[in-house]
Length: 407
Image (tube, rainbow, N blue to C red):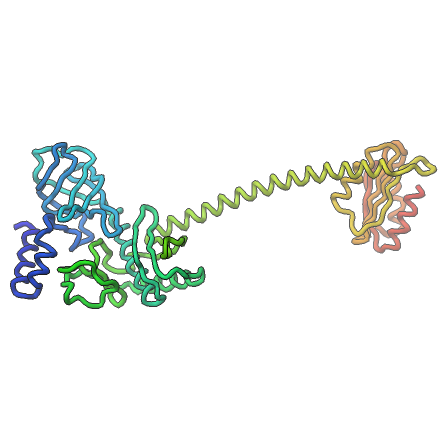
């Protein structure tokens, strides 16, 4: 006797004895023309079955029993192979589970073997159980009711009401649901009648025999999807972006290995953004330096043009300022590029001095600088064109400037 037949007669017997109401049995099972093996064993990857229906092109088949989950309830379909041919889609058409194949199945193939993509199925199981746990925590501990669920290829979403959820509250929700998952609560499946079932998070939307998925001490929901055996298998839940969708808040989340992929993606994205920002800052710094140089050149040349010659024919820029910074040095260089130019700039901060002269003046800046600064207890030196140093006090600095200007 096929497994589906044994299930049928087992339930039929319970219906006759009254342990399952007869009406519930007929509503829930007799019209379901495919035995859905995933209802009873989410970890069933391989199975044997008989082809009960086949399209003329051999690309669309129906089996008497299947472990392939069809798209429904927010969960995507399973992939894998039937008779070695890839399954590209699985449809739930009322009481039929239809398998769409990537290549024709020959008419001679009646008995076939199926193999479900275990990695894809496990991922879906983790997301779906994670969603049940998340929705239960949201409703019971935070007053947020789940109104819809969708499992995507890279992330899943639930829509909750009401709308107002702060970023701080989301972190609290994430922490709490992960605490519950780490309790490694058992997840079980049972069949109960809608007339007598109790303790469901959401009222069932149909009558008859219901498939109830229970997370011990956390959630009971009518659900036809595939689930892990214990919450620890979900791993962790990571909450993502939120957006307003009509009157609900759409909340993005990740479970299991998707958490790792998302964290890596965010890290890589952050690194890429940081690298891009560093490049832009470097480019901006180069531009800033170039523009500063150009502005300093203009300012130095203007200062020279506005200066006048002293009795010795020198055009001097002698000034005491708070600090002789890089911009000031560039202006000084521009000023000194002209004939008969002399620069003596001092900074009160640090008692520093910059001394420069155009070669046309015949002054060896380094030699003159060295001869006077040592006498005043300072230090420094330089080349014939320019010299710089520092002294111990402002009084010494000002005396030094007098000596330089008379040289």
